[in-house]
Length: 99
Image (cartoon, rainbow, N blue to C red; front, side, top):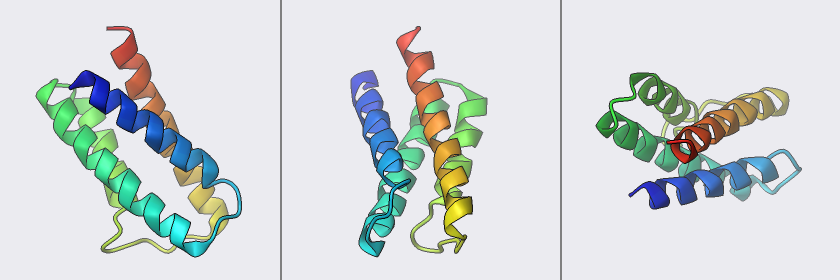
């Protein structure tokens, strides 16, 4: 299970990295689905691991990237949100790799 979670986090970080560059609108729609799905998976995985802080961080990311009821932020604010989400995924990766 850990390998799948690490792979999905790496994929999500890559997707968020490319979101910093100008992309077509459909790309950002896909970003919402991918990141929200990864965050929901992260909530479940961290809940099983009893890591409450990460559960709440992944929950916040899932809400921010919810594709069914999206937030409409300006591009500059989305870049900040993307960076925060990438840091959360990277910190989960780092924590899992040091265990």
